Length: 425
Image 1: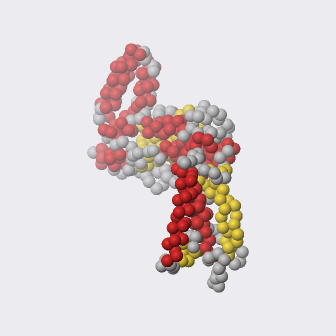
Image 2 (image 1 turned 45 degrees about the horizontal axis):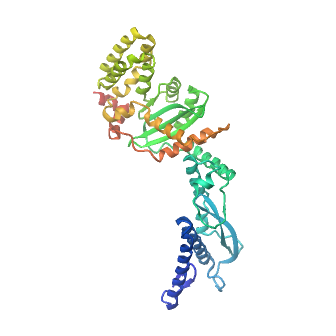
Image 3 (image 1 turned 135 degrees about the vertical axis):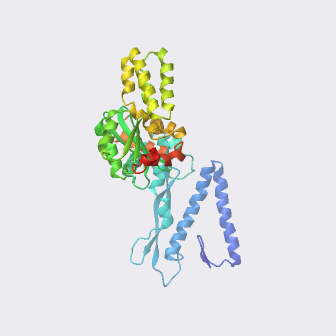
């Protein structure tokens, strides 16, 4: 004996069963063929809703026995039907489901119905469409494929907008509440950026195996120490641990550097200045005719593997710049030692290229901006934060391990205060 959706408990050896199964299959095939001219999805939906009905009936039969037959040991009863909706391709589709109650009048939840009505499925499709640039007004016409002649809902502008706000608020909470204690972060990239006319600061961690992990994002009027401390304190409270040594790669903002020193005071961290930002700042002070040789000498100094020799070369360049433009020389001397942090740590090759800039964080910022490029009206409140968080989590799905990740073990030894002296020797 075996339970089949439409037939209840049946004997598989019953010679009549083959004909009944063939009749059911023929009916589904006829439905599929009739809808195929409207598109594959519409045809699939037509047959899928029939199958869903059979699965719901099977759940009800499993709970209450075959409908219309007496079962002495029955613990639940069929209790009519009820209208409802299930998630399908980014919208809700109307269906009718059977109801089952226990003998003491408690409603029985059917497993198939619980899975089919998951709101998360609807939100995932809708958020993906919004981040791809589809507006709430166009969602129904652009992001949804024809599903045939079925009653649909939750596709209007207001419904989509409300769901998007709720879904992105959930992503912001997820990003800001993420537990960071599971994997040790060796490197943290932090960078400030402008997003829809507001200053934002984002953080990106790199674990010991090279995996990138978004740490959070905060919003402020400027990239000041208070805003930066909010980001770093939140990450630290959630498990970001620098006790074994940590490298912070920053864009050169004074607020970020001050915040790192305050939040991680007493812990063995190192700060590395982004060389691209430093090069850009120095170059901006000199005439265009001077750009080529200044850039060449900067990069040649940073390629040296001996930190003392590299510093000597940069100081010689600063003296040359002093005669051309004192402001350019001052820009180079400001934070000069921090541009050589990775050289002192013995980082070379591919990993040096990765840690010499804030590019991993800037790539994430670019993805956030691309996803929000079609937003025309930014309202007050947490709208920017919600979009930024959703974009960062979307970017995380595209991450690959950092280039040079095989060298991270050596970096971990160099950062660890217990082994750094041995490594240096």
